[in-house]
Image (tube, rainbow, N blue to C red; front, side):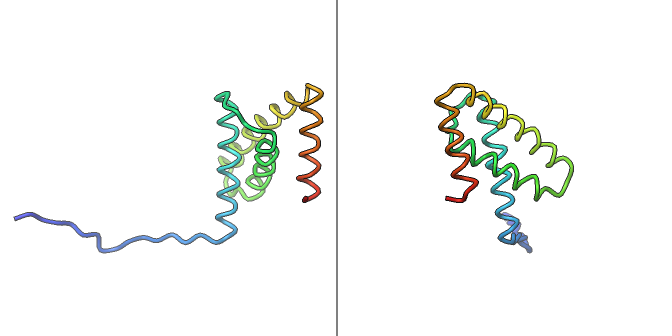
Amino acid sequence: MTRMVIPSMMIVVLLTGQEVAANNSLSVCLDTATKLEARAKVGNMDLVAAYQACLRAKAGARDAATRTKVGVATTIIVEEYRRRAGSRRARETLSGLWELRYRGR
């Protein structure tokens, strides 16, 4: 005779829209920093979007460990931005993207 164990309770976690957005921002921020550390290609627009995601994630972080991780990721992203801004062409492209993102276009 075989025995089968059927779970009697399923746990469902419902997240609010704000929590989902914060989680998405955290993912974008940390994933982009990880890609940069791994020397993977990250586009200029993705770099700017990741920086903004880091700012949102840091504002929504509830614990010190998450704030620390986001802080480190932000530093990696800002350093890459500054490195790219060292060349004239990249600087023009990045500053244009930066302005577009902050003006909300």
